[in-house]
Length: 144
Ligand code: RB5
Image (cartoon, rainbow, N blue to C red; front, side, top):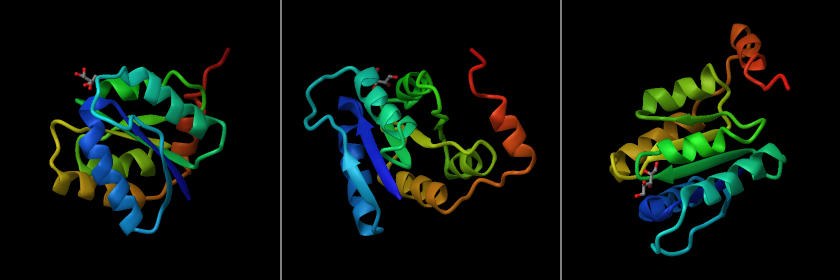
């Protein structure tokens, strides 16, 4: 399982937490930036992570920005990406179980590290359930 991780400046500190969490839990990951708190544009990093997942260089992605909204909108523009904005550990689990989401997005400004850790545990602890959810997920892909 290879994970691509990115953020913007607002998510920079939270990204550091996520990287250390992934390391502690034995995941193979790559930090796709940014590498400082200097102001950047979230779509640049969202696209980088999303394309790496869409091109199967990574299995999943994790993105953070202030709200998580910007990175999720941007990541979902990349065909093949199902980016889910998880506002709680329960959302993270359901995003995997029902939506087979392949990019986890969450807010760096409205979550503390403790909640972020629970979101990550929930995401990685949940599997896609398939069945009727597969049919629905198949209908998401662009038709043209
Ligand atoms: C940056 O200030 C902020 O707009 C960004 O991190 C994000 O929340 C956008 O959706």
